[in-house]
Structures are given as C-alpha cells and as structure tokens.
Length: 156
Image (cartoon, rainbow, N blue to C red; front, side, top):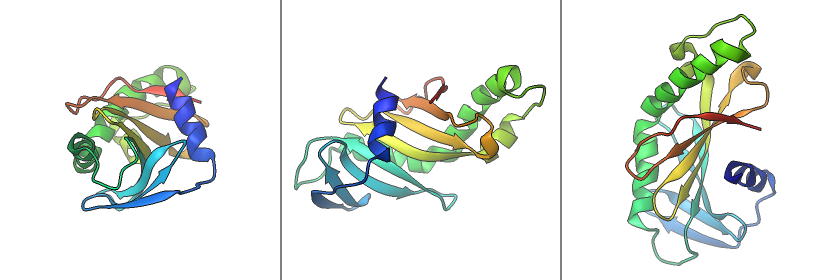
C-alpha cells in the first residue's frame, strides 16, 4: 500500500542531494527515494514533515503543489476536526474497550505529523494519536486537489 511505502521512506536516514529555496515553503531538500522534503509550521505551533512527489528542478515547484500545502496549513484545525469525528466513531465502536471519546477530545489528542503531496496536487495526511489511543497505528486520510478529505483509516 502507498502509505506503507511513505512511512518506510520517512524512517530511513535522510541523505539530501540537492536543496531548493521556495518563497513560501522555505528550504526543501531533494532525496532520490522520496522527492522534495521539508518542514511546515502549523498555526498551533507544531510542525509536520511534508514530501512532494515532483520532478527534481532548480526552478520552483508546480503552483498546484504549493497551493495544496498552503491549504493544509490554513485549514489544518478544520481537517483535524473532520478526521476526529470519523475516528471517534471507530474508537468508540471497537478500540475503546468500553471507554468513549468525543470528537472534540480526539481532535485535541491527534497531531498531523506528515503530509505527502503529489505533482497533481492531491495527497495524503498522516496523524498520530497520543496515549496509545490506537496503539501504534497511524491515522491516514487522502486529500484531493479540491481540498476534500477522504474517509480516514488506520494503518500500521
């Protein structure tokens, strides 16, 4: 599955081969097995790693890719809330062992850790939950070029 490949690539040590400065995204580094990689700062003060599957270039990234990353940064609280609604149903139905969690509480306890954006502008979002809510599983959700968030799933 694509998510497993992404997770495996992130766990490998970085071996940057080329750097690019982007006016919005800052310093990006190129890695042959990953593509462009960087760090994005969220409104809540946390950071997430992002990868961009786009061609190696000395010029700028495609505008659609930059727009997707901007969208995630600007809308991450809303995205997290939407994911928390679906995942609280899953937690309350099968994972909680009799415990329940509200979507609001779950939204406070999940953190965006990684974003992958593809050259066409769509991508995947990876969230981790604190306190082992979903053991060592990662919450994964797709993101389309129009900003629509797919139904989240657990991976790992």
